[in-house]
Image 1 (tube, each protein chain N blue to C red):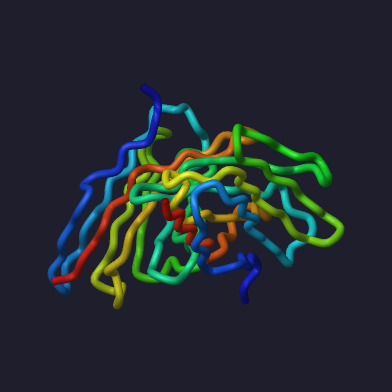
Image 2 (tube, rainbow over the protein chains, first blue to last red):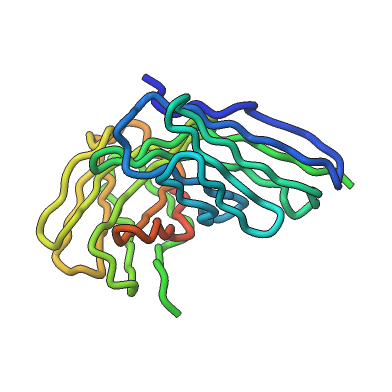
Amino acid sequence: EDKVVQSPLSLVVHEGDTVTLNCSYEVTNFRSLLWYKQEKKAPTFLFMLTSSGIEKKSGRLSSILDKKELFSILNITATQTGDSAVYLCAVEYGNQFYFGTGTSLTVIP
Amino acid sequence: DGGITQSPKYLFRKEGQNVTLSCEQNLNHDAMYWYRQDPGQGLRLIYYSQIVNDFQKGDIAEGYSVSREKKESFPLTVTSAQKNPTAFYLCASSSRGYGYTFGSGTRLTVV
């Protein structure tokens, strides 16, 4: 079964747009929720969220977790072509990690 | 520089062969993981190890084997029992509270 569901599956935007990527999950007592950016190589770590309602921010990227509604969002403002990638969401539960299939973001000039 | 090194980057296997993928880390992380990624699917866990000389099966362990004789190394063997081995394999390590570090991956193709 799918424990982590990401939406949309793919997204095409113009430079300068703001995008919101969604991650919903089924598990409740998880240790952390993680966001990764995957380009041609391995995923690079973006955020780790463990507490509900606390926004994590890094430059133009921010993320927040809602443990009550079981979802997280990743916001990217003023998008650039370098933001084009697959964004992965993962939940750490027990000793395992459950990844979504990712959202493929394409930013066109 | 600290990190994870996976080798080789590309690997070709003939049907019926066993092949071993290398994963080495110098981050002093206790936990190491092997994932498999196929198009349209999320990363799936093959095996993981929390400490030296101990490892557990993940969701798709059939046809794979691992060893953890040293903290720094966690090689993955893809055996001939794995019926569909062509995929991208990612190794990762973690230290509690600090997120995860991934290697650059190995692309395995059966020829």
